[in-house]
Image 1 (cartoon, protein in one colour):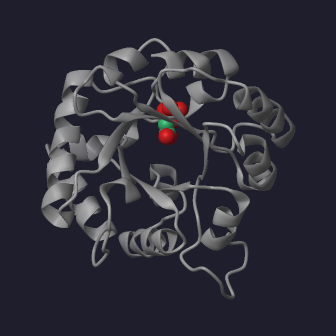
Image 2 (cartoon, protein in one colour):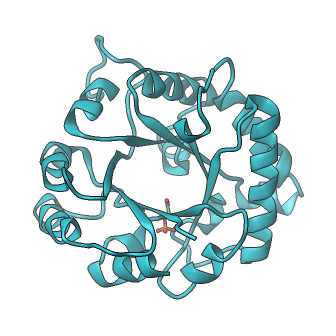
Length: 242
Ligand code: PGA
């Protein structure tokens, strides 16, 4: 079955390399899995043009909490849409932990993204301490509940969820695929209870060309959110074939 690969380039790819890579990606075809590329903001306008008329989608790594206003340094979801983005990552653990984004802010970002016809990719994940103290499920449930509070989502394709254990991101450690599948099933059920919709749920955290296929084989895992391994042509191609 076709699954989804979301390539989160973070701040790892210099703009010139990113543009070169996007041109290669525009020629990728006949891969098993679908691709959404999330480069940095500075190349989104050009990326939109490069990926236009290809089967690949463009996403942003973040967006502002409002469409317009006195918000120095922010990027409007309206402009992301105009640049050709169809998706936006919201609540990534790096945003939550390094930039102190709280649940109220994440909730506003989800709403404004939806208002601007962007599909949010909402990230959820527990820390190592939370996992060790047996709090993974309640933590994920609370993150989901607060992110979606008061938000009406029309179709199940209007939102994507991504489960990324914080301790697995960029660490080389990943969860056993079977456990990831069970947790993802739990997230999917919680979202169904809260919103009445079965959303796609991705897995992320130290995914690479060697472990991708085993995660993608799991029943409840709709795809992968990939950082490091999505920034090289060869490994990205392998992820798309996995
Ligand atoms: P990683 O990052 O694949 O480099 O662990 C995943 C992510 O942060 O989305």
